[in-house]
Length: 265
Image: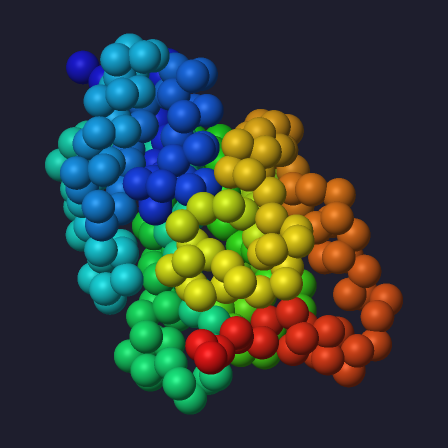
């Protein structure tokens, strides 16, 4: 039988980076983990390591969350395992740095599906159980990109702005039901995201990136304190909130310089 006294935590994009870092912190607290990502072998390695180290229960689900039916398929898997989620971490996402028209439209659509649509669908499926129990936590991973537009990563920045707006609105809506919604907004973080998105040679990655451990330490403390918005790093916090007082045209010019792709010679 499932031990109802143990937290069950679902983390998407758990095979590396921030998702893996948070999985390690929840495991150290004895949580039951549901780890989801495309890289099933990497997920299983992580789960086995955490089970050996912390004697935790775990479920590994290898699934591409960028497909339209992914959230429904994942929810059906949860039902088959008899799992009720206490903490949902919507971490899966990706970005791309290039001229808007140089990125294939199919990739833009996949980015919007994963970063926004699957996140909303999964939240919509799991939230009713939390409301019924009058407890639960949802953590949506946004970015410091959530706070302003980003030339050359236009769609990525727009998806992260959506995540922040969605999280804040939902947080206010469900607080009376005992459910917390947190938006984690990290700045550049030293994971494989930088190389995959082609942002790792941009100014802000080179000069302002944080380690995954540092980001996850701040994130974990903040979500346990039920904070609505978490921005790890004092410089990231200053940059994120200073946009409220900076002329829009100046923000766009600055972001254009920071985000301009470095073309091969």
